[in-house]
Length: 208
Ligand SMILES: O=C(CO)COP(=O)(O)O
Image (cartoon, rainbow, N blue to C red; front, side, top):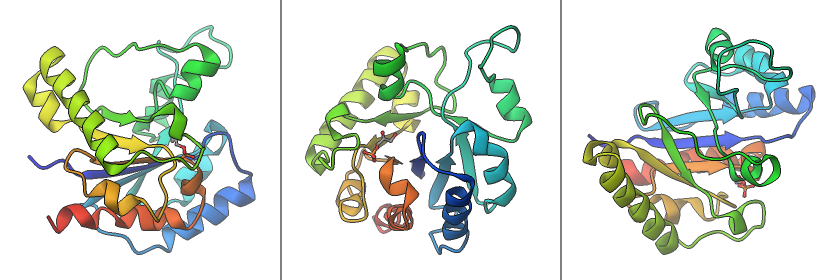
């Protein structure tokens, strides 16, 4: 089965209510390939999730930027996966390198169902230095091989592996054209109108 192109916008710790409204209006008014071609997921900071949920067009989904690994309880400041589901938030970013380096998080994946794997070279995050298409393809192939060896061949062929790190309107098409690049996790550019151009790079796959 073909892997559907996936574009995630990680807003990180940015924005005000006014900024959020502007970004959502820009997204709502954008013309992008249909849901059959590309899955778009934006990830605002926790406090803006209900606002984005109320305003965002229904063909775009929303992700939280983290969640607590256990059920609810006496865990001050944490937000459980159940709470996200209750709010209608179907996705969550887990294990981002910024959380690993700044907050000491580590790998804790127990199953692969519904996982989209993001390769983000730390030297490319927020630096303007993007991996070359060949570099991204090489690492994605390596990750798929790892999945095949350590998980299963089904998981290896069906899991979407997306690239993140200084993706922008100028470099997305060439990256998207790589056979094992199944989409993007976008930081800085997801706060700007060029995010729509990045979503549109999905067309590269459908014209294969
Ligand atoms: O970390 C990233 C997305 O999660 C990438 O950030 P930039 O696109 O700003 O480099």
